[in-house]
Length: 487
Image 1 (cartoon, rainbow, N blue to C red):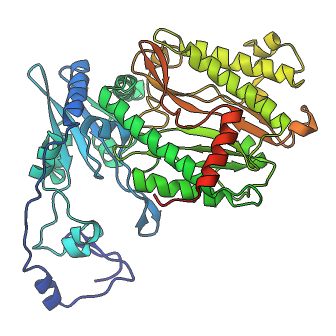
Image 2: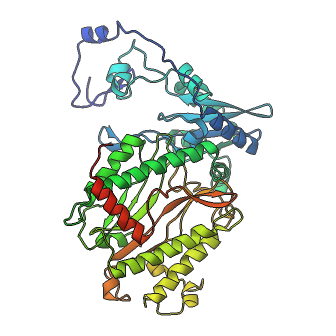
Image 3: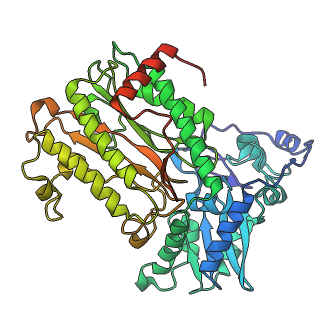
């Protein structure tokens, strides 16, 4: 078989060996097939209720939600697969290539999950294909998956026929996840540039704004693992010598992989001046005693819900007076925002109080060239030169959750009970900023916590990590004294 040949679902590469027919025949026989002992997952009811709510929003229409496929990393190697968030939110399925279709039926919908079938032992595919079970492990049968997830399943091989049956003008697709699905179900009114499909994405995002009790438990789990990860880092962080940012990234990544699915996003580990780069991910830097270390990291738990926490710590164990002054400004801004949070408060109000506190701090530092009110004026907003970003974002099964929600339901809307969001103000003084005093240049500080909105106000899910400057110093000393630990 030549390089690139495909036969019976098998693709070969230049490093693959040729096998004689006798061996192939031998490999197709003598296999025992035992069913898995699977039970309905406890969370399956939550997924069913979400599908029912989506069904109610689009009566009589066909809804197509794919999860996506593994992506190529290099040549014939792939990135680890992470399911599409909306697909996982509606099904609980973590396998690649699946497509959920809600078919109109009576007053509601019938949900069908199109998923890859098990590999037949009577073909070469199971031991020669990169997707064969000898390569990737045993897959569930359709019956097993249906039992576990509480949803009807169908063979992925039937998907093309199913998509061809989707009625034009009565079908909405969650696009951008599966090119094959996007191509098979074309927008009915191209001149509207996919407005109907965007409405499907918006409705799912807006449903995700309010977390149910199971989702809140998952976020607690992710945050608790994240706290342990920060502790792991603190325990190996020397006070008197430098270590690479990549060591810190790796130590936290070990906790994330052990206690969860993975990191919820690429960890941001910033030694010294690198903290002024908001999404610093090169991690080529080294810690320096006397400087600060900013760490923005979160564990994604096994159900894909992620924490998002930032702490800034003094490498030596103690803040300098100037570092503490800036830190206290950021802390005051964060607490002002958290104290305001409750149902009915506008997202923009939280932003306003955080930004004003930061801007007043900038004035106290002698940085602002104008008054606080002038800097905050919507025609100016020059305070953003040093605050750079807004106060936070929604959090859940995505680190930036609910991203397709309409502005009036999110950024221009009000907070409601069950929302989970970050509060993460910061101040950043670039090393080459000639408009700030020399002693501030290269200083970056952010503090971020994960906040649940309840009827009684804000509940900080990440209080397992310290926030005040005094508590950070004490915590760092305690962790260093405890020493390294295995997960």
